[in-house]
Image (cartoon, rainbow, N blue to C red; front, side):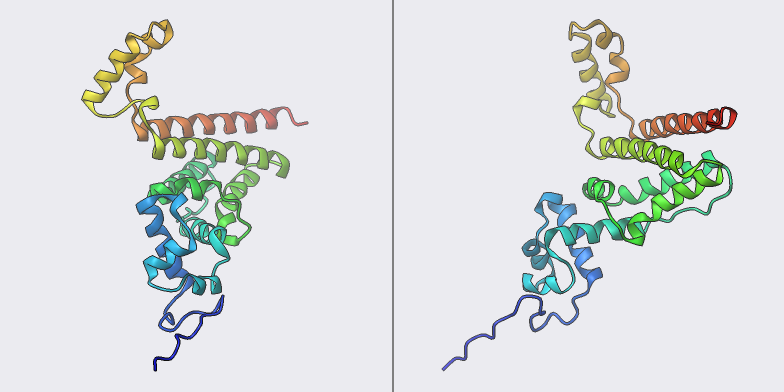
Length: 231
């Protein structure tokens, strides 16, 4: 007579899952995201990648939100933040570049990395780096927070556009540019037709550089103005 299979209690890893780790769960979650997107993440989907009972994951993360937070913390915590050199523009630019490099390693996870609200040291490290640079430049904490949020908004916007860019933003291949330009020129909208050669083309690197430089110009101008006209 065959003995019934032992039951697995919620939160206790099943037999054979002794090698399960939080790092392994994060890697498996990234596998799901890279293959099927953030919406596909769930305890069952990640457990299938790992070959374990979904219940065993609760020993490490608290449901889907826990999986997403763990991935965001991993990606943010692994950003190679540059040492501050005392040049505000250069320091903020270097942080933005490091942020972009990490986000683009897993493009499908970029929105997750940029929009989860985290309280961990890993999740707050990039914010700490930006605030340090702004405070060192003479900003008071209130102004530093406003400027930091402006920088983050610009960074989030341009990176989300970069990883999700579609026909609305143009294209980068020659045939696609020509087709898009023709469509725009025939739109019957004068301003759109005039700008068609530029609207039809979308270079991700160029757009990132332009957006970040514009944001940095605004930040520097704001700080310089505050120094000349203190409140």
